Length: 397
Image (cartoon, one colour):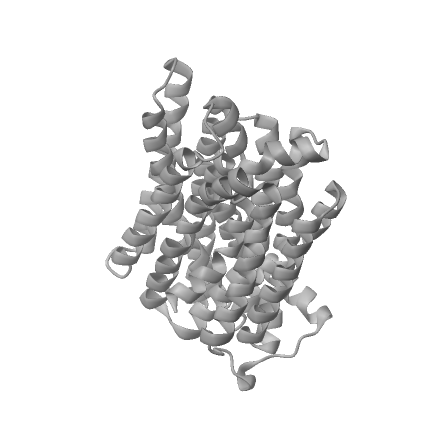
């Protein structure tokens, strides 16, 4: 089950990272600026974020299995459109369709976890999923680089066609229905808007979602800046994106493994303190070294990126579970709203902030430091609000 759910969650990082090495070729063929070609990510991320509000409630009403299969089929058709796109505008349109469909996988996968498991078992499966899922961003740009060098940038989108078709088949064969008809709720757009708004207006929920978003963005700012870092700052080739991605994804993977082993043995609060401390400490060190050490060895920065990613991944699954636990009867809707907030923040980071920083390494380190510290402060504020509310509730009884 972990392999299946993690594989469905891989669609999004593969859709974003695989064609990073093709940025210069796409810009040259379609006569684009650096900012314009970066919008091929934004055009994917914004619909991805917005449609996550619909995917969860739809799966609450229609079931999980059918939603996933339909989503992967639509993703496959959109990828065909990207392969054949005759212009930049059409490429953006089909990237938007990809984003609309790809969000089904990770959103529904999280709801399936909570359908099947509770407590520590849910945290272990979530962490195991993230560990498997983390392989995708590491291999995506390397794989995309080799495909690009051998066959050109359109073949990279051809890979996405094959991936979407295979995942639709995988889900059809192996995904059980974890949300049977007797547990389903009817889908009403008005009710969806009201439910989503009610969840989003819960201060504790929104604060946790924003904390998760800024922590993720603190690391993903490097991913969004990857083409400029690899090709312009580090002067590496299209096939060498692993120099940036392997340390970050290695941090994600080992953090997920550690988190799954510590679930039930170490409190969530203690684990969050560890994660935030690692993020702040490593990014502050990176900032100091970037400013004070000319010609900073690449290996030193890779170690610090590993620690940043380790810390961020240590916090994200726990924050996600705490959000979902606030609404146990509407986990699909809660997963959708949390994804919308997190991905909306990441869209801003990748689409607007990353091009503005233009791979300025000290500014990237400062951005990561601010994200880690801000995430910690927001989480602490949310925790204190929750403790005060529970104390008042206990007093009332």
